[in-house]
Length: 142
Image (cartoon, rainbow, N blue to C red; front, side, top):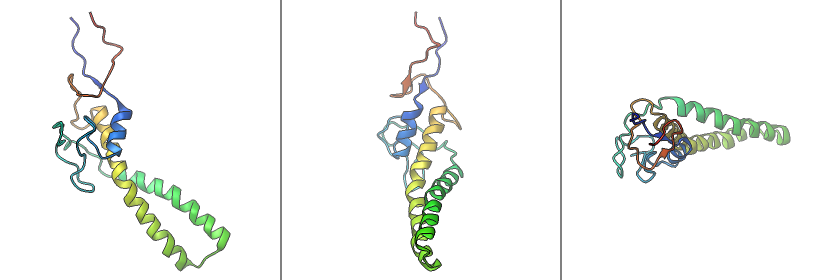
């Protein structure tokens, strides 16, 4: 009799559920209890979420993403219209802040979903993971 392998978790589904602020395990419970505060456990399936260690990664990804959006727009506006610096500040500071606030929670959720799918930082893979099992081609049934 072969030993039972831990169930593999579907990365894309966990990533999407996390980005939407949902529990990566069941997809129904809330991942966050506040804007960036991760819930200790899922309020639907009871999955422990306190293991997450997203740390500074979401901020780095947000900086890179927002920079790649805002900087080309700033250059295009400068080349086309040459507005005064105060107008640049009036337009692009609020835009930068708004985009950062908009992207921060989904990116943090996606990173937590990725950590969960990989079994990182205490998100152990179990043989009974609900709703996220992916067939393991190395395990043969007899």
